Amino acid sequence: MISLPNRDFLEAQIEDFVISSEKVAHVQVGNSAEHALLVLTKTGYSAIPVLDMKYHFCGLINAQRITDAILGLDHIEYERLPDLRVEDIMETDLPLLKPDDRFQKALDLLIDQNFLCVVDHEGMFTGILTRRVMLKQLKKRIYQLNG
Image 1 (cartoon, rainbow, N blue to C red):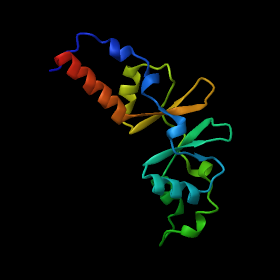
Image 2 (image 1 turned 120 degrees about the horizontal axis):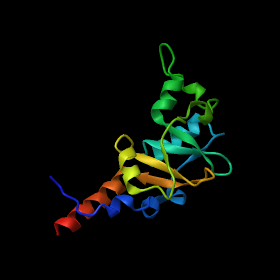
Image 3 (image 1 turned 135 degrees about the vertical axis):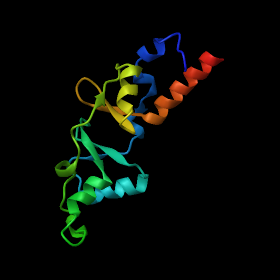
Image 4 (image 1 turned 30 degrees about the vertical axis):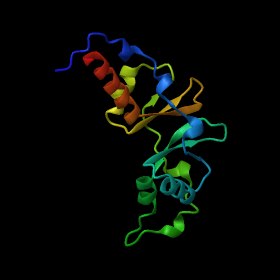
């Protein structure tokens, strides 16, 4: 069993580990599902944030939600993609982090998520925190302790 004599790193703020919003692909609420699918495909990401015109976080969109929205009874209705709006199909019920949240909270939430969106106290999207980054930090800490 791993023994961590010092839990200070669990209390560290996540701010230093956040991937800046400028580096994160996103779509806006008024975009079509066709545009969102194009961005998802081109970037290779599983999901991307949806922002309003002032960069407030609104939700996430992924290819599965888009596909589910265009499934017909006997075929996929691709012709609906240009008319379907991102805000009509995005996921909005998801956990969010604030830049001053602690490592422990992020670690707990990332168990069930590939990444978490980080928003400031006004709801402005500031970036994402990935499970990969958090695991790398945890690994680094464990190796430092085992020395």
